[in-house]
Length: 102
Image (cartoon, rainbow, N blue to C red; front, side):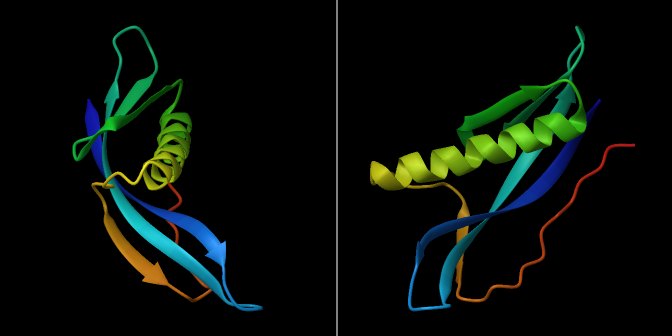
């Protein structure tokens, strides 16, 4: 069993003028597979460094989101190319996916 999701990540590199926030949004495609020994693994088909494990789908989605956010920060610090589509925004209202396994 596997599922393919597209997560939307928000990364806030800095606060600009008073009250103005610059946020970068990324879309992270992920594939979730159930492990035979239990739990789940999530991998990104476009970013080989981005993967995670969890006991439930909810946990693995949270874990890979956290991994991706950490990788974005690291890649920016090391001046590496991030293999995700980036969308800059100066707004403070966002739509974020909330995934719940059934």
